[in-house]
Image (tube, rainbow, N blue to C red; front, side, top):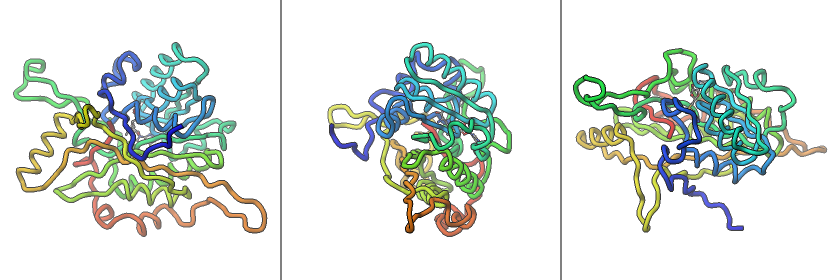
Length: 322
Ligand SMILES: C[S@@+](CC[C@H](N)C(=O)[O-])C[C@H]1O[C@@H](n2cnc3c(N)ncnc32)[C@H](O)[C@@H]1O
């Protein structure tokens, strides 16, 4: 078998093509979905059929759908009721065609994950695949003036609800604290040697690069996880040795606007993929613990880049999801 590569060829087809007939109507409206092939690649690389996969911020349930299709059992948590209902509908839809898998979605705050997941699953999760919510600048779909009767193009499906507890609405500092807590809870339900895969991207605010992947790496360490890999998941296809890019309308607009202002922005065509493991604990006199060595807040202060720390960019300029 060939060795896995750090570059994941995850966009041989577009996101709508990857979802066609596999996701229930309404799923496309989520503002920050993961590309199904990214979840599928992580699941095939880090688990075997019959194992348990968890997404603590599961949106419309992409991780769960792909896990069930690959014969794994899947658990999801989603804070917003509307998306949790859609995730359940997607799980039901997938189970009609799949053999062997199962899926369950809980609606709640993933910071209380260990209370939301049945105790019989604690210590049994083989893989966590997730992506934190991080803003809306490139989310959404375009409707023409002909459809809406309004002037110019109109943006739709680019925001979460206005619930302030949705982590999409909090400052970067609070997002990182909350995400550290969620990863800490994930570690507690992972089996020893289990894997956590987080996809994320940097974004720019007023031209300045905000390195969210590095901050998430620090959050994972603070949560007591061991960093194992930093990979790239392509959002562009490859044909005849060339990249076939698939930027959104708003991504193109943001890049063009920035370049007009002299900021050398590039069109993002990949996700950063951070891979962590839950270290197997040794027994005997030199036994180690994988409990975090410092609190989430202390870790954020010590490990988060100054550029991230100094920002409170709730709602503005962040770009997440596929
Ligand atoms: C980047 S999206 C994940 C999308 C998902 N991977 C998919 O493909 O549909 C992040 C999700 O986290 C949810 N969320 C925000 N705060 C949360 C919390 N405290 N607990 C659980 N989910 C939360 C958001 O509502 C959003 O659906």
